[in-house]
Amino acid sequence: MTSTTPELAPLSKFPHHASGGACVLLLLLDGYLLLRLFNTLNTVG
Image (tube, rainbow, N blue to C red; front, top):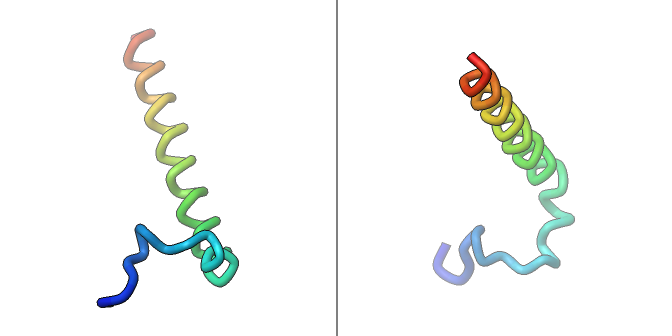
């Protein structure tokens, strides 16, 4: 953990964690859509 950090990992390392990255992206997308839906219902209601 001294040489590199996950945040600054080069793009070449992404294929190694493709499944994990996709899972995180899906979770972020779900959270974003839920937040938008909640905001829309809040505005309409």
